[in-house]
Image 1 (cartoon, rainbow, N blue to C red):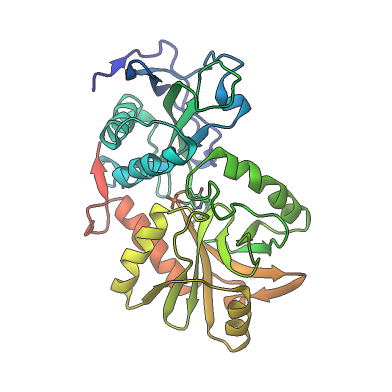
Image 2: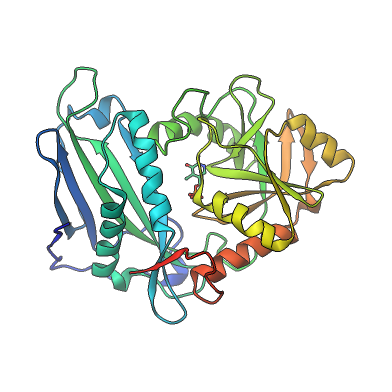
Length: 354
Ligand SMILES: *Cc1c(COP(=O)(O)O)cnc(C)c1O
């Protein structure tokens, strides 16, 4: 793939690494590439970061043909820049796009695009432990046409945001979770397995309700019975029952997290059983009552592992591990972040040098 690079003449000052937060700052450049039905994908370029000019009739604005990815580039302790499982992220976008009738570049092109942007913006990959350059590949329908059908023109672009440790300091902060029994994130047969912006639009209302009631995030139940747990916030969910990690099986209402897959891969090495199976609120409550519910945590690129300290179902709070991060969640967090920083052996070949 030929990538034309045009560099900014007005680079921005870099924010102090202690103040990065999440998604507040953007690097100097972006990657973009366009699709037309006649010509396919072309015009791959790295250009200065800035607004796009897009037809107001574009499908992305009206019918929500939009999806995205989220992955990270790290500066290893050895100074080498590496991406975490870029191919898995690119393949997930390829797998999700057909549900929205969208074309994607090839997975190889998407990985190359990430590398190209990180090379140009290498100075934007922060150094401090826990920091990274968050990459946000995005795919949108750009054709100006109001008829209801898949668009004939698309843009794939990547923006990059230097981010701090999700937890500020170094200890994982457990979250309080509201079990949502009315709103549904993704129904069976819907878009839940694709990282579609529409799933996030569907999730905001319950998230606001939960925040108002004093909780951090929402536990999503299945849309049919409202009895089975699916995801937590924008993360996959794991429960440690005795010595076994249980996570709901992938389906068309669950996003196949790369972190979820990494945790499943690492768990057996930690002497844990792993079961991908349906998990009901009823089973969680029974396990809590008889003392076998040891930990609950979410997994995702941003936080890596996010321990759940409390689950509140219909106003009845359930404290988990006394509201503290549990040893298994901590160990998984330290293992994954250690591999990402290049201080632990990358036994599974997850890191790709830029
Ligand atoms: C992105 C996302 C996840 C986490 O996926 P990772 O690849 O681990 O970052 C989980 N659930 C939903 C709904 C998501 O959008």
